[in-house]
Image (tube, rainbow, N blue to C red; front, side, top):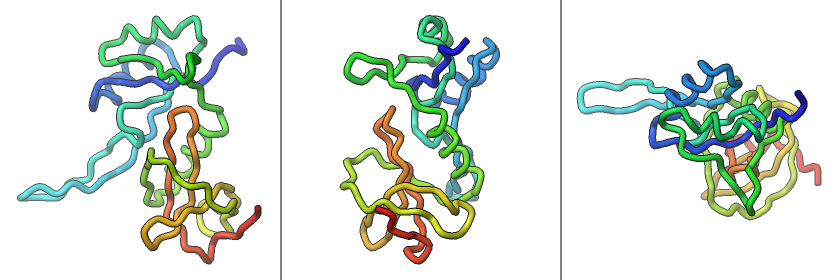
Length: 166
């Protein structure tokens, strides 16, 4: 079965975990990138897990099974761009996994970011990764674009660890 691809599913608000679980129960491979966030209540602080891309998860399936995957409660639709189902390459999934595994602070951003210089990370847990560098405010961010959902993953990396490659 070589027609398996990572498709991008949009879910109802805050239902990503439940939808991922239901899809796994159907035997589908699902990737739901999660990040830990410290929430402040009046009486306490608590670490909560939340979806990196609000309302999105990745489902590895074939085009013919998309409709079936949408039958789980909480699933809304598969994302389309220009009439085609949005897909994400395995390398992009691997990149997101690697970034999250390091535990570095991550932000997502879906604004149009001006293309920056192509850079390579020289040190730290993400050493060897290539992407682009943008300056927002007075900080340098290392950007990995996820074209399938028009999202950017931004990692704040000290400039000294970035080498311009292009």
